[in-house]
Every structure is written in structure tokens, then in C-alpha cells.
Image (cartoon, rainbow, N blue to C red; front, side):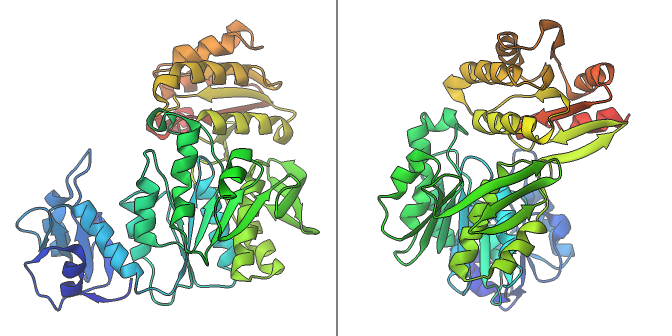
Length: 445
């Protein structure tokens, strides 16, 4: 963050100043442990704690505070709204070209790939982890500075209007739509509404901007046709402007061809080629050379809890439990046969959240789909929809004796110890709230 006088920060936030106006802010944080001299500590009320209760600790470290209580250095009516307003005004001072990435699946991986590619030839800043909401995105913007040439931001949404709001803060130059699936279907009500929500990004781009989209999905392709800015479709089919062909896929990554050149991504799952093609398209908009693209893609690594292969007590585990929806689950299990053809897979599923009235039906469908995959030998289901997952799996090809319901990740770990063989692969997939990754720690005990 470039240095900004507290007086300016207060004006941007629309607050009341109770501190020295000449204080210079050079960093914005929401965790008091990260506060220091020159920091602006934003006091945010969370579900587990209230940032206002840690304002004193932040001040002792040399920070100033902004929040909704009278004792804050800047008093505002809403801390979250103030953070967004500050980021919106700060964005206007930056010369960086902003790339915004949205979609039902693959957002974080695509951000990482684009950042890795652009970072080979430019000064970049990218959303850390999944900073994709009305708190994380402003923080990612405020982490940029005057020397930043490209900012790569992730945008998530589970309600109409959220992406439009985020775009109002970020003012993106390039929009990337990775795909459309059934994520957050319970909030949106239909896939058509999900498409409308994701295309709030396209509506927010300037006429001289660029829209990069998955042209293999017909409904995305048709929706994109309505926009007049520069458009670049990526995919594996003939309609794609940036077209890839998978040459080789294994547990270490995937080799694909695009434009007569071969590239390698060291991220398991050939479906990640789509994310890589989006990065190729973004590199083209910024004018980077093919060598930069090859180098950037090759050095990209999996994000935490996304296609991470670990080995615990001679048991191979594929940790892909950062999040889950029906589309991402089917994509994963379809690809596993190509990546691990020799493995007897133990599928461990938790709940797929935010599916609303469709939840029971989609969990049954997902359980049956997994059960019909050739190399899935065992199926373990947990969470509030475990019964529906098990019911679906029972309609598939897995013997009923190989289908289990677990009450906790620790219980699932006990089952795995009994059934895992020499050639097994445990696959973890669930929504974030299930914290299914704790199964890995349980296996270590």
C-alpha cells in the first residue's frame, strides 16, 4: 500500500476523525496480530469474534483503528462498508491493470496461474488465498502500490448483485469467467440466475476492456455474444480462440498443446488445463511472450486443500476438500480414472452446501455418480446429507458392504485404516465448513 494520510483515509471512509490527521497509513489489516506501526486496523464484527475487542492491542503496536465504536480513531457506521469505500478510492490512484476472475469452480487456481504467468514479466499483486468477498477483495486492492502493473483479483458470489458491487470497488480491465456450475444453487435458484450473476463482471468492464471466458460451455458462449468488448474464448473445442489439447495427464500434472506449443502444469487434474488456458489468454492481452507463459505455468503449484497429494502412514491421500459442489465433484471423479488408473479409490464425501431445495436430490445424484466410476472401490459419506449420499451410492456399482456413513473425520480415519490397501488412494471432497482435512491429522495419530 502506498502511504496515505489518515485524514484522506477518513474522507474516503466517510467517517469522523478522532486522531492525528497527519498520521500516515501504509498497511491495512483486520487481524490485530498483523498490526504494526503505520497500520490501519479495521475493526470487523465476525461470527466468532469482534475486532473492536482487539483495538487496544493494535494501538499498542502502533496502529490506528477504524470501526463502529466511539473510541475508534475513525468512527464509521459500518466497518465493512468503510473498508470497501477506502479500497474504491485507493483503486483510482493505481495504474495497475486489474484482472478479475469469477466462476463456479477453479477461481483460486486460475488466479494463481494468471499471477504466476504475468509475474514472469510484470510487477504483480494477487488475491491471497480466497480473498473474494466484500472484505477480502478490498484488502487485496489495498495490498497493491503505485509500482503494481497488474492486479489479479478473485470474485465470489452467492447472491445476485455481489459481483457488481465488487466490480464497483475494483474497476476491472479484464474479466475472466472460468465456468458455470451448480455452486450456491440454493441461493440463486437456477443455473440461469448463476449465469446472470457471473456476467455482472462482463457488464462492469469498459468497452476497451477484455472478456475471457470458457467457450466450451454453450450457455457461457451464448451469453458472451451479447457484449461488445474484446472477447477471448478458451477451451478444448473448436469454438475456442485459445484452444488446448491434452497430451498427457498423470498424478504430477498435465501436458497440453496450445497454438502449436507444448506447456506443462504441475497441478494434478487435466481439468486444470482450462484454468491454464485462461492464463494463456490473459498473457496475450498483456502482450507477454510464449516463453513467459511456459515458465509461469510450469512453476504454478496447487493451493492448499486443492488437489494436494500427501502420504500418511503409507496411505496416499488426495486432499481436494477446500470446497465442493455437484459440478466440481463430477469433474474430479471423472478425471481420477485418467490420473490414477491403477488405484483403488476410497471416496470420502462430506456435505455440499448452499444447494437449498435441490440439496437432497443433488447429493443422491452425486453419490450414485461416484459409485459408478470404475476405480472407486469404497465410498464414505459424512455431514448432514450423508444419508442421501449413501442412498445414491447404493444405486450405483459399489457393493453395499463397501459403503460407510461416518459421524466425524476421526471416525472416517478409523474406517480408512481398516480398508486401505497397498494400492489405495483416499480422495477427500467436501464443502469448507466440514473441515474434512482434519481427517489427515487423525490418520497421523
